[in-house]
Image (cartoon, rainbow, N blue to C red):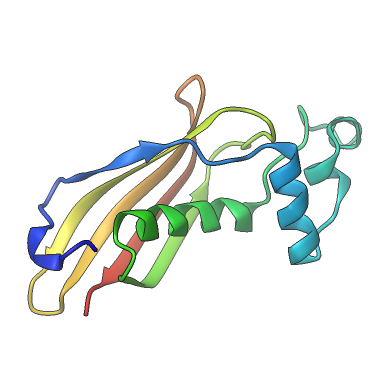
Length: 134
């Protein structure tokens, strides 16, 4: 378990490649009641003018939150903000990265900047999380 006392400013959380494959996206959209072609069918998405099926925004937010919990399983995300800058495509390789940008010793909180990037290193999603440790 990650201890607050061991966290360092500028610490980079190990990058990982979230599963944005069609099967996983379909499972997510069914559970979320968002089973729309733009998310689950490349041809339907193209008919809407998209380059292919896209990962739902709330799934991208979930990926960012999961990144925090992979790093610090016992932590509590108090806030997470996201900015969508590009389309995360289903079946494409994505990379999630994160860096500790602030530490509040008194409140036992950290700020973490998070990103999801495409295979060609385009930033698709930016996020900032406030994370509290007990």
